[in-house]
Every structure is written in C-alpha cells, then in structure tokens.
Length: 101
Image 1 (spheres, rainbow, N blue to C red):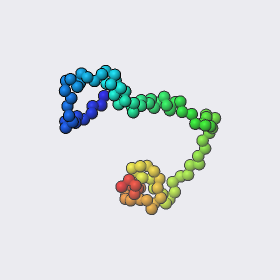
Image 2 (cartoon, helix red, strand yellow):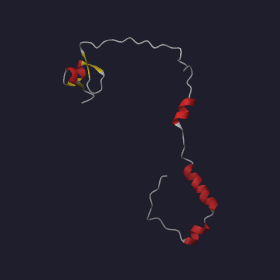
Image 3 (cartoon, helix red, strand yellow):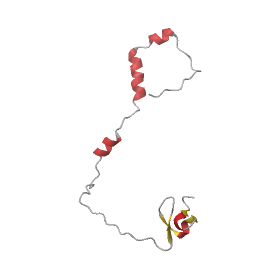
Image 4 (cartoon, rainbow, N blue to C red):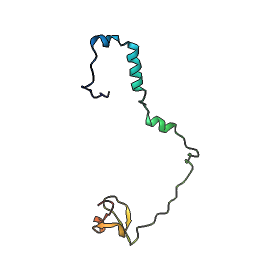
C-alpha cells in the first residue's frame, strides 16, 4: 500500500466536519482514487496475445554462419564481433570495442 505525503500546511478539519462526511462520500473518493490503477497479469496477457500468422511450429530456421574474418575481432566484454576500426584498446583475447570502453 502506498502512503501519500502529508501536507502540513493544509487546513485541518474539526471533529464536527469529520463526522459530517457521509460514508458514501468516503467510498466515492476511495473508488475515484483507485480508478487509475490497473492490475494486469503480464503472463496471462502474453498467453492470450496472438499475432496473425504466428504459428511457426512447422518452420525451420536456416542461418548461414560466417567465421570471423581477419579484419574483425571479438570484444572481451560484450562478446560481439566488430570490424577492426571499432577496436578501442587491447588485442587478441583482451580486445575491447569502442562501445564498451
């Protein structure tokens, strides 16, 4: 439950004013304050979401894998293969790209 900050400068209500407020008014205020909150179960929403043509169960993925070239290096931090122009420091197994520096 979230607690709101107390405004100590606002005028305080007397005991009589507090008793004058009806329970219906308090309920209405409470429902208005909670109306902006939406509880969404993300897992349930993801399960019910269907994209058109999304049945890929019979599909095979074929990707051509190209070995690392002589002018490329593998960054020791992000493990991505970059062109040698992206080399910031190091060499061989300790090479670091410009994005990871």
